[in-house]
Image (cartoon, helix red, strand yellow):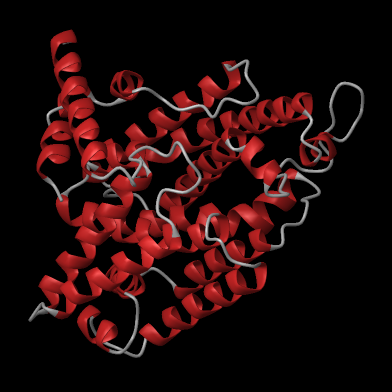
Length: 360
């Protein structure tokens, strides 16, 4: 058992080292706010567009779109990339496309060197592309008519899996809110008026792809997906308190106070180390309660998706626990390869090196 873990870890680390050396501009685990700048995104969008237009059929266009989603996912989230390796190929491809569709607008808002007005305009254009994509029947036709591959791929996934348009519209509204952030009064305010659009609907995208188990309902899957999405978002908030503070954001609700009765969010926005540490702990503690709720509903999902969902739950709840135990307010917590392997299903380790070495 230990030998399998060590071998898998060595293969993964060797591959990532080689890939980083070959492409020094790309960071394969998110250690920086900016993995690709705007210019690189534009170049890659142009390249994938050419690849899609070279396809003669819809299945080829869909495969090209999935490869693009996989490239985005591998470049931005090694943890989620590992988790998705446990999905069946067709579901995995759909999840990769979804990831690209949520990653790009998030990068526009968080990392592109644009004025707030230009960021807003870019998100509006993206939303217009999504609405316009409904007029076309396939990915290639959408791309021929000026729809970005990322949007075209997502539209295709949404159609095939019955994902309502209102979910993606809600996601883009949450991205716009981050351009001019406002404080949230309570946990309920944060969940209903921000996390719903930024994370819950993404969980709903995935629930439609994963599908219910026999005897379960989509409603049960959506409830579990919502709880896990809230937990994941809160963990990300906890991990990024310092970075968000620099952007003028505090996601800790205004009614949360420290032991002296002071509003913690005020100190976070002022860059106070003690307040940042307190906010990190409060967010991670609240996240822990949502991981507990999410675990109760995982059995509602189809068995061929359940391993990946359980792996995701274990991986990120482990990260959340690490945040709670961290003593450094400047540290952006992450899991080592060995820590990731320790919570992933041992019987499926073989999928990790095979996927990382041979998928592109």
